[in-house]
Amino acid sequence: MAGGILPDRDIARLSADGRIACERPFDADQIQPASLDLRLGAKAYRVRASFLPGRGNPVAAKLGRLSMHEIDLAGGAVLETGCVYVVPLQEGLDLPPEIRAAANPKSSTGRLDIFTRVLADGAQEFDKIPAGYRGPLYLEISPRTFPVVVRPGSRLTQIRFRTGEAQLGEGELAALHEAHRLTSAADANISGGGIALSIDLAGDGTGLVGYRGKRHTGVVDVDRRGALAMLDFWEPIRRGAVGELVLDPDEFYILVSKEAVHVPPAFAAEMTPFDPLVGEFRVHYAGFFDPGFGHSAAGGSGSRAVLEVRSHDVPFILEDGQIVGRLVYERMAGLPDRLYGADLKSNYQAQGLKLSKHFL
Image (tube, rainbow, N blue to C red):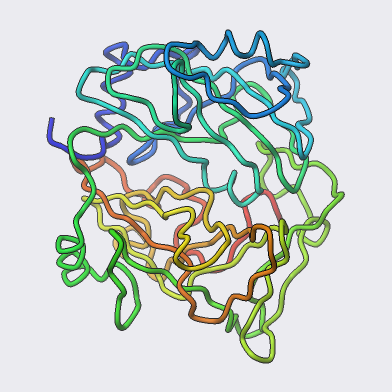
């Protein structure tokens, strides 16, 4: 097996070989071109605080000590903002010694400001599963802006499987950009292991540049599409006179990149969630970009990166065209059978500024 991120067919093979344990068969659309969606199990545990199990410690043992309340998710249950929950996932792993994995929130999860991280037994880091890991998986969930309804089978996070060295070096990235135009920037900034993305505060023809999440809203059912009125949950933000936006501390914003993004079929990408070199804020909680995102042959011409942005500690001024993060590219271990946007009912292909699929 070549080094790189495993494509859909190899993920299916892992499952067939018993390397991915499931409480029930995969959903028809659960395997993505370069990742697998993970499903919530039957119960959630409200815990006092976020935690890592630490070397040699099972998550279940920590839950026994830190859990405050057990919640049955059957029929749907509300997870409140500002609280931390841990949910056993329906999928477990028995990885071969050459395969490791990493998790990341799904795009819709990030756009709802649901903070999620995967836990594994003995983990000393969130969202990272070491090569050869054998055991269960758990998801830490903390809604930040909206209370949410979840149930068994809800899919808030995804996992990628890797072998060998997958990430492109800066020279390789520059060559790939020269050949395939990874962003629409006239003078792409390639440094720090990735290609820069900047913020669009010029807006569209109506002057719309983004959205700010409202507080004290109703609940969002994560499994229902197009069920909610946008203005009940979001405040539209219009272009300012000087092309600036002041980020208020701990407010949540949906913004968009100035550049269109392209991920060729033989590659996958990930947005760095926070770059301390560009400011004290976090950008893009849900950072996986699948093969074919923005690819013309998959209907993605002009796809831009929607950015989930939150400032920390102090107000921060963003200016139009300011760099807000970097896109890191990795090789695929093989071409996927299907590309993002091609026969997958992908929600965000060819997107501009766009809220999650839950809003009208």
